Length: 229
Image (cartoon, rainbow, N blue to C red; front, side, top):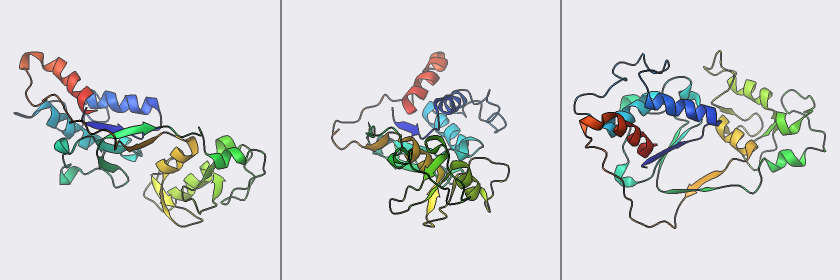
């Protein structure tokens, strides 16, 4: 494994992404891209799948997901082509990582508000079901409280997101900080954190994927996807 893509809103979104990456020629989202269905002459499986990824991250709906691209080794880090750089809201990092689950399953601010009447800072109406309807800012000094729908609509106003329901980013109406929608949802859900793995100092090893047997091409393709993802 040389790369991890994380930040999907749910398992279904992750599976759809995985399927399209494995079968780009059959994906209705990707099949219109010239040359996406097969490798170019002398193109390795690794380079081919990296090319597919660079295209995927720039088309709807994948380009709107709050994804992070995590390379696990400096030795295999590869810059995306200038003409296919991922959207600015997607972080690209390098280094080993570990998964650390938060002690609380959901935002503690929301839990503590269950027995308190909360008013939305945007529409001024009562938030009747804070557990499902309420969202707070990721800025620790900000006291924003609002309906999820209200904040989403606020973010979508004035942006080039016509016809969209879920925003990518926006400015907090209270602290005026630019926020990523994915960060707000992760805070609300109390998702697990991805942190640098500073304790793992073992040499990083990976199977050489650049030389594949033509007679085992189908098997090798599946194996490569497992390695790179």
